[in-house]
Every structure is written in structure tokens, then in C-alpha cells.
Image (cartoon, rainbow, N blue to C red; front, side, top):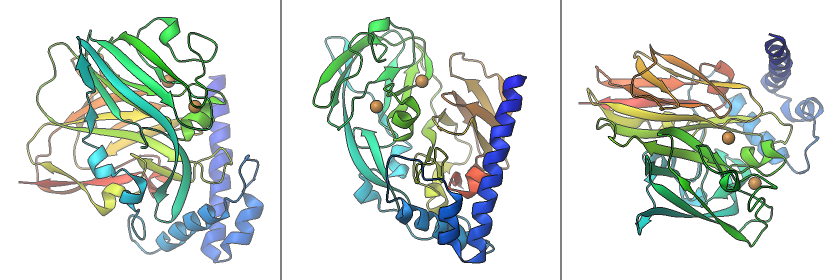
Length: 351
Ligand code: CU
Ligand code: CU
């Protein structure tokens, strides 16, 4: 109970600070005021361009009735497109009965909302990193190469030996720039997991973009479906340990500008992962529909039939639904603030 009280207090102080920022933008004299209100305690300077871009987006939205971002993110420059990433599963290569991947950590500047650049740390050049997919019981081998300027690790959720857990001080521990290691473990239990860097400061290493979904299919598989990966994330563009941009699969409003196309009546399965830092809770809400929900995907029977699910940090689950009618259906975080700052999208249902 005590923890909940503290969480609410922190939450309220954060929300009231945000309101101040929003109010300043609405008056038009946004930037000078904004700089007084937003603490600059980060290690990086020169965040004002990103702040200006965020404020530009916010000002463009207020009172316009327009949903989504003004302008488009350059997916080609980013090197990844949320519309491809949403259906991209990386099954690696099977050699001598072992499923193998090669993962490279590298720095890369990415555009997370039109005009909003973020100096990300990436696995294989993308945020989120590749969605690694295996089958229950397989032996997995991940060769990790650190091509960035900071020590990193890969920490997988699952059941395995301590030396393969990817935390500093155990096994290979931190992998220094220019060095590599091999993580080897079995794919158990089946479900929807995640992997992320576990170097310190942990919140920074995750918030910078070093995370991805990790799917272990049950031995007997799941019924055929149109499968989607949605990693709920956010970006602290001014280093105040609070997010300015929220998204599913990194790019704010990506699926508002270009909805995710699905077929009427077809089973849609969503692998939903929450890797948001600095905010305790995230959520997913679908309009005009309900879904079966399988927390962590570790059971074959759904726990809930609902239209909204809440996930804490690191929590994930599988959603299954069918769209009975054609048309355009919204989905978004039911935390309205997140939705307004980018975590919103549409399904385009055809047929
Ligand atoms: Cu790291
Ligand atoms: Cu974790």
C-alpha cells in the first residue's frame, strides 16, 4: 500500500509539471519558459532542438482536432520502418541443431517523431531490436558483439544458468566496446519474453533503446494468425528522466499516419511488450472490439476477455482478436497523456 501511495505521489507531481509545460506552449511563448520549467540535469547538453520539435508538435495539435504528427519521419534514414518491423520475426539460423543469432550493439541517431532526433543505442541498428523467435526446448546461441562506445550486455528473460544471464560481474559480465561474447541457453519456458542490456545505470541503458521482444513458441505451436509485434516504448529527449515522446515500435503516431492493415474475420495475434522507462505503467486499449489476453503467453488458455490491459515495466502478454466489421479502428495507451504524445494508432480492416 505504501508503495502505491508513493507511486501516485510521483505520478501526480510529474503530471502537474507536464501541465505547466503544455500551458506554456499554448500561450505561444513556449521555449524560454520551457527552459525554466524543465530541469537540465542530464549528462548531455544541446537538447533544445529536440525540445523545440516536441513543442512544435504539441502546439500544432492543440485545438486543431488533428490526430497524429505533423510531417513524416524519414524511415529510410532511420534504417527501419515500424510498418515492416511490426510483422518482422527473426528466427535466426539453425546449425547442427542449435538456433543462432548474431547481435551487434551500435550507436545510431534515430528520428522518433517528425523533427525529433534521439541519440539511440541499438541492437542490430534498430529500436526495438530484432524480435527473436524460437521454439520451446531448443538450444539457443547468441553471439553478441559490442560495436558501440559503452560497455553493454544482453540479458534474456527465461530460465537459464547464472553465467548466461548477461548481468555485470557474473559470467562474461559487461562486454566492453570492441569485445564480444556468446550467450547459450535453452528456450524455456514458452511465452512472450524480452531481452535488454543490463549494464548500469540500468534505466539509461534500456531507455536508450537496447531491448527487444523474445518469442518462444510452444512445442505444439499456436493457431495460425496474422501476427504483430508491438513494443511500447518512450524517449526522454531532454534527459530529465521523464519521457517526451511515447510510441509503440518507436515512431510516434506511425500507425495513425499509415494504419496497420488487417483482414476482417481473420485471427490477429499481438505480442505486446512494455519496455517503458521512467513511467511505472503503460496500457493498451482497443476501440470497438475486445481481445483474449494471455499474460506472459505462458499458458494456452486466456486469462481475460477485455478491451484494455495494463502492463508494468518489463511486463508483456499476448492478445488475440478478430475484427467483425471493416473500417478504421483506433488503439492507444489508455494513459491519455501517452496517447497524445505519440502512443496511438489505427487498424485498417478490409474485406
Ligand atoms: Cu548497455
Ligand atoms: Cu528485464
